[in-house]
Length: 368
Ligand SMILES: Nc1ncnc2c1ncn2[C@@H]1O[C@H](COP(=O)(O)OP(=O)(O)OP(=O)(O)O)[C@@H](O)[C@H]1O
Ligand SMILES: [Mg+2]
Image: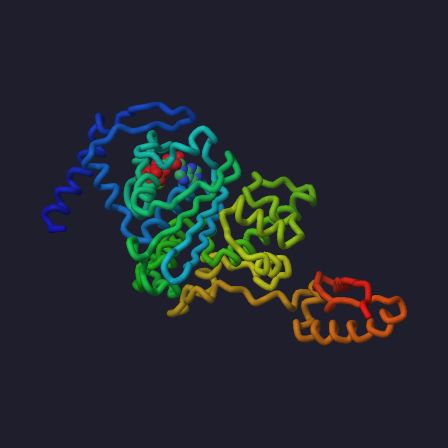
């Protein structure tokens, strides 16, 4: 785009925003939502806003932040080197059921009275989700409940909507003369987008990880919340992941993760979450608090050490190798006992659960 054209676009945009007829409401959709009247020029401008994977993340996280979320979790996973799967989960105010099918339409917004201004500029035109749908195609509302939060998932073909190659490095940070932390360089990648949100608004905890890591983090957040709740402490709202911490079985966890939270994980990984083999992530806020002066923060710094040394996780002290040895001994011991009763057994399955081992021996009639 020529410099002059850019200037014209900007002028048009400002003019549209200040023109009462442009901002006028075309349709009242109830529940505080409206469809704004808008010019074709502004629609085009908004479509151009979504040019990269980073733009998609920015707008989804911005919406979650606007909805008053205390926690925003971004799962960020590449599929076969080409498709980027993103799922943004929040515990904000949620979307009324009547509006679920409308939020991806142009100019539908609940922000008509208070146009919002943040570090990315003015917004509240009801165009971001519409633009993402137009540009990316695959974007869906997985679920949203009033007072419990929202989950939105997108699958992006990076051949048409690109992303920065380096998605592992966090930006360089520095403290300016006023003592305020700010970004001082580094790639314009997703870690940077999220770091900027954290710096702007330290009240919202933001997490970034793979599907399994985000699931583990939610599992942990839910378990903590349920402990307070069971202890009779008053808790503020029940996020969409509240039920997660009550699940004890890999298959059920996998189903809940996919159907309710938009996170595709294998049953094996769901099991590893239950076993604390995939530990919950540190939030970006915590990472910045602990390591802002580190000149080279990486995404792997968000990983906590596995909890093998947790006091109550006695069984975790046994390695998979130890379990193999034990299983072989059990199978061997069973042979003579089984002979007596005309029984044989499959290879023993040993599961580690907190302070116990659960050993299962599938029996068969012995054949001669
Ligand atoms: N995570 C969310 N939680 C609650 N409501 C949401 C969420 N995401 C979207 N919404 C609702 O959907 C509406 C449309 O979102 P969209 O991003 O398209 O427009 P906007 O945020 O109003 O304005 P802009 O185009 O500047 O982003 C929002 O106004 C908001 O009411
Ligand atoms: Mg928005």
